Image 1 (cartoon, rainbow over the protein chains, first blue to last red):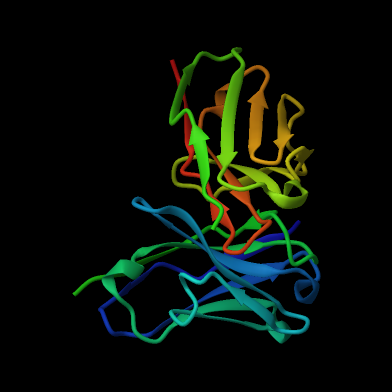
Image 2 (cartoon, rainbow over the protein chains, first blue to last red):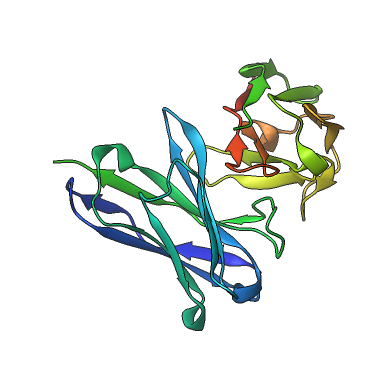
Length: 120
Length: 108
């Protein structure tokens, strides 16, 4: 069975850095797109971006370009989402999502979500 | 950016009834790259339909997707108790990929 297991909830202060993770299992990690979706009560579901681990091709939504970094470590089947300086508006639930081998794909599998709270 | 508008916002129905959920796109969705997800309270979304009409693994055949271009529909032929949830459409044709705001299907 395909599984995406995300790291646990985080509570941070504005200006702090953060890196959350998503470990994939049950499939060939390198040859499926893996990405991130943000969910907030105000804006709903938002696609942030994704990566094809085999060649590190990475795509970002313009809304998140420059605000976050998506990366992956193929050797341990793990994807990451990273911030260098958090803002209160980054408070949300973050889901990792698995696509297909195509650059256009629905999200066939979702992680359990990582709640992030940014507050002074 | 393709804006997806879902209607209605809330659908109040009884078990056994038919549910029809709509998703309208501000521009044509190429290759019908349109998906539907179900989300229950406190859970991650779950893929139901991709490519506008293809059921994902394990999705019962009482759920079906239809449509093309700018108008898409998710139909649940006979509502079961586990179908009461929030449903989202999602286009992955043009960056940035976008989601609709959701339709809540609640028990009448």
